[in-house]
Image 1 (tube, rainbow, N blue to C red):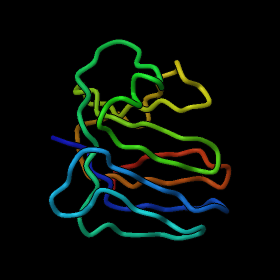
Image 2: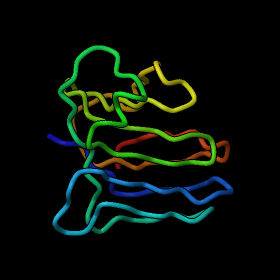
Image 3: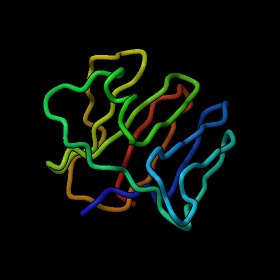
Image 4: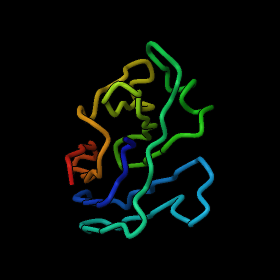
Length: 123
């Protein structure tokens, strides 16, 4: 099962831009979420599966058609590793793959903390 973002909570002082780089026929490719907003997503944002193995650098992730999240802190690329984990790499730590959610594919809540860090939880 695939991961989908069903809700975005932006607790930061800056707007957040979410861009889905793969084509989406129903127009759910991007969202702008203003500061201090909690937004439900009618058509959940899909997080693509990435078939590359091993550590994926920020530069390599940038060439893939995967989810891109811009926060006040950093620019993130996110993907489903196909092994029940949502993985991300950010521009500030370009060779550090972080597990952002562990568990079977499901609907998720993306929270952007006040400091610009991102967190995921089951919706």
